[in-house]
Image (cartoon, rainbow, N blue to C red; front, top):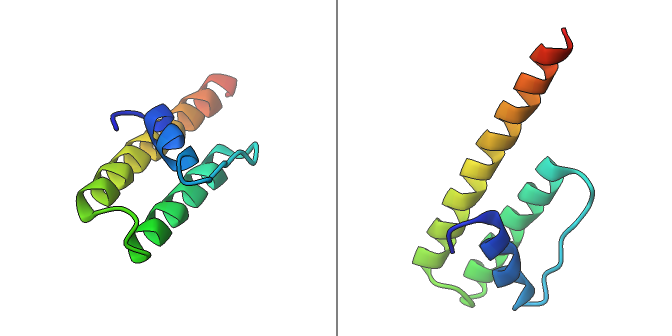
Length: 74
C-alpha cells in the first residue's frame, strides 16, 4: 500500500466500503476499521502501521489544502 486509493481497495477486500462525503470523517473511519481488523488478527502489525502512515499523510495534506483555500478567500 502506498496511497489512500490502495488503502481503500485493501479495505474493500474485507468488505469495508467508506464514503460519507466528509474527507476527515472518511479518514477517521478508515483508521477505526484498520484498528478493528488488527484487533481481530485479520491483518498484521506492519500492515496496520503502513495504513496508519498513509492516513496521517492524507489527513495532513487535507488540512494543508483546507488551510490554503481559506487564505485564498481572504
